[in-house]
Image (cartoon, rainbow, N blue to C red; front, side, top):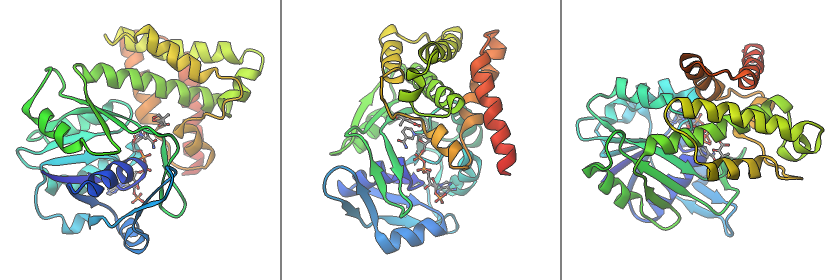
Length: 305
Ligand SMILES: NC(=O)C1=CN([C@@H]2O[C@H](COP(=O)(O)OP(=O)(O)OC[C@H]3O[C@@H](n4cnc5c(N)ncnc54)[C@H](OP(=O)(O)O)[C@@H]3O)[C@@H](O)[C@H]2O)C=CC1
Ligand SMILES: CC(C)(CO)C(=O)C(=O)O
């Protein structure tokens, strides 16, 4: 199976790196600056003991001249549309696309752009970041992919993808209702983004402040209510797990949205919070705290421009 990993950032670098280490036929679609960095340093995976270095096969958009069997889409939502333009020559009938982005709206973008492809749903669980040197730093010993076809319970593509991704360092889990899995992760990501973005800090200081825990609960309840109204009620055990994480005393946990916001980088606010509030309006669900978090992020974005 010919695999194209679009982006060699935190998620793409980790998952693509593991696939390359296992001898899978993997190529990374990268832009010039990243290609130069990877040629010079190799793809380094750090944070899990000894650093590992992979010499990846690279291609840039200008040299993309054939289709692939599997496209693993690992860009952030901020780069989605440009990435779809760039990867278009890699997609043909028979191509399976597996996006790992948080949120949901990218599924519609992929469907609209590549009607000839099968777009699977996917959720990755990993905590990783790209360092200033371009290395993938993994911050927790966990790297899952939950994958499934949308609308049906199985498909021939799923089995092939599962087999291709089943390598050391990746735990692949086919799920029967991947849209629900995606919604539930989305609720969590929106809640962490809104909580840490609005309160401007990690979980520990937020819950230590008077009213902090109530605020966390209220934000999570808003996002959960949208999922429920959309037909994807969040199981109680998942809400409990999210609450445990978001109310842990002393925790340094933040969201990537918050980290991008305070670093003055483009954020996935529209894709994550914006899309959720849009759906909330359509469903008649009020989300005042998430709205406020989004407003704040939009103002920051306008000032960044
Ligand atoms: N990091 C994590 O732990 C997790 C992240 N996620 C989600 O996964 C998605 C990806 O996040 P993450 O990997 O952290 O993001 P990163 O910013 O680390 O990586 C994205 C990479 O995509 C590259 N890229 C962007 N546009 C293109 C393009 N047109 N062609 C080629 N490469 C491109 C960027 O490269 P360049 O240098 O050229 O800009 C960058 O290296 C997000 O939606 C995030 O929310 C989900 C779970 C965990
Ligand atoms: C919270 C985390 C790391 C969970 O996987 C994540 O997906 C994000 O911050 O975007």
